[in-house]
Length: 240
Length: 240
Image (cartoon, rainbow over all chains, first blue to last red):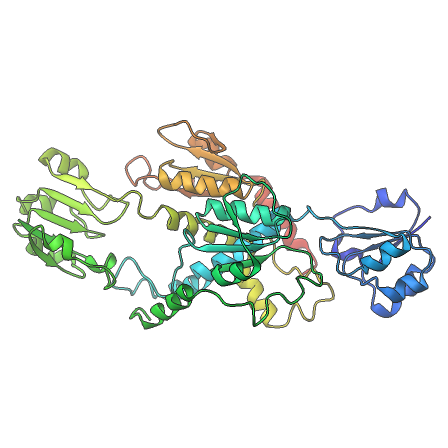
């Protein structure tokens, strides 16, 4: 059985082992594969492992032996899954490996925006706090997350983790999902329209498909007035 | 009854009202008060409101009318509370006003360190990601909080809130406190020695007193080996 790893570097840059995979068949590993070499490298392999290399119609048509495509990532939009289904090719992704780190990333972004840590660090280093007349030195707005609306589109393992952390920060968590399920988390399930209208922060944890493609578009993005006014309020302040 | 606010700007820079306080007596408000003017401004006032202005031995000795000192902050180390007790002067602080925002600040710092958002933002803007051969572009270490040890010294309302958020991030929460209490939070109560030895991140939410003064000293700060090794590992990597 021939196995080909098309872009192994993304998952294993030298700190993991391919040995177990090697035991299963004749294994070829490429760090990266440009589009022009995909068909040639898969050739008559039965198993294809990809991270971001696209396995679309042309590849399936030219590489007839493919029986399984393993995506070493969560997003599986790189594979034409409709065609794979038609051809009886099994496709798997890894939906849960990144739950904690993606949820952490979301709050890193939210807090970078809300707390302005890097701007304050730069300002403090330049002497602004030392020269401030007040102990409570405020140069940039700080937005308290407690009581703010956190919108989450998609309520899989990542969406749920983000909701849990949002709850801990005292945020009101709004969720829009195809599949409303029972949960112990303190969330309100709302419509797509409502989530765009009411969220102070909006984070997407849904598959990329026809329904969700370009969902954060001009029509949908209408963050609430309260938030816009907050920024205007700060611009008027004398702290600058 | 004479009431004096010594450094009102710290609490009220124009967006709050002093009206309710004015109803209680003859009110004098100063935005800021230098040390040299404290005694003169308090004079024969019975009520003193301070944020960061120090009310020490000399002040109490010269301003005999003081009956109450209100600290418009959580930390009350600006007041000589032992002497106040002796003199029968009531001192209050505001222990809970900042719970959410301080807990938020703690995680802003932890995430700024762990996720390197501002460094990545700068690097991405300069074109590093666009020019990267890999989709999974990694220039600076990213530390996953889940499974890391979060040490909290002090377990009042702020310490508990920090623990709650730490739990949501999947961290192991270690707590050192004088008063061990029952809690629904997932925390381990440990000794001072243990918390310094085992914490990947350490955060202080205790009063500043003789027991806690300069606690984060050379002797106590011994972050664990695992964490030091992590940084060394990253320095060896080829991503730079």
